[in-house]
Image (cartoon, rainbow, N blue to C red):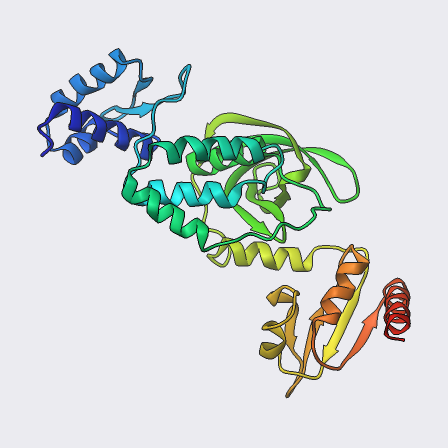
Length: 319
């Protein structure tokens, strides 16, 4: 039971920040007080200008709403450490967030207790990040944050989506999961108009709008969002076809190739096929170079022409 008022108020604020909505009975049970005490503590938070809303429905409840300014976050030791490390790692990973991420990290580290500051420093000193030149599309952080909220709150959204052919169409979906792969972010959602699961690249989403309509989450086919998205990416239409039959078992090839695991299939004793098809010729050549074994290639002529050019350059360089 939390009898000390300041400690109880901090605990109450922390609970309100961890979930979208709490019933009065749940809060009372967590704090070890009566629902009447919870109501008084909620009123105290409101007097301190924390935007706590009361909700209607069976038994009612409370939630921390958006206000004029963000209230102080209450983090435990593990949460604070994880946040600091994540901010340090994430700096520069999303368009427009490099400087903002570093400012947030500076604020957090300034107030960390000494025992946590040393933990974070040790983690940062023992890790490093290699920054590669980014040539592909990058995700808008506002879109990523809005979709993360919609997935968490089970709220339908609408947006304009640009397909791989350049066509733009309106979509109305129930967002379930965000999946990162190969430098891109994907949204796994159930399309309300087509009544079917769909995968959308976040860099192709514009005009994102929450609908304030709640939905009941559906089970993802196969039970694993990442595996489902990987399988769909592997089977998506591409510009260039390239299938390699490798003279090694599939498991050995999986350990050293850049190809998606779902694109590597057994093809008899000691052999497998690797689907290297894609929209980017240098990327196809990179996957083939990483196979690490002899292979036969069934590919479009554009792929073969590119490989011949790459091979001639390599031979010339080798003297």
